[in-house]
Image (cartoon, rainbow, N blue to C red):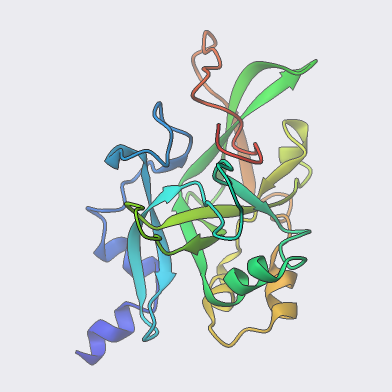
Length: 225
């Protein structure tokens, strides 16, 4: 039992132990159906810490609908690192509901004059899964699944050729710090920075005939469409 508990506190071991649930090739890309609809294929596997300290790999819907927003506001795709601590409710999630979105790569479209022209993918040079910082919220009454949004920050030099923002990809040494339940707000905010130059590779999507689709908006749109 002690060995089992030790395994559940290591993110790399979690992915190995749950390989059948976390698919190799997992990417951040919106599916054809909106991710907050009742569609199992629209879920991502997210790493979060349970109340008793162990890590769990949980299927969540991409698109966080804040409880404090009134009306029919669309779910948030991402939360900006620069403003995540400005609102009390966001600070609460930052303090208690942090998560990691493991993914092998993420995609973005190159725009010229506001028009999508070519899709590119980004992956780590080491080929290890990216650990993207995120926030999650427990499903409220009437909702079918917990939801999450990843945290975005200004782009580093490479991603900046395609888009001005990028996901917060945590370096290996910062993964445990992000999930540390005793981390201070100051330390957490210090982790929300662009990945160092040289860590990522950029590749154009092979099929040049690719066209942007209405159900595949920018990864960095502020809200799901």
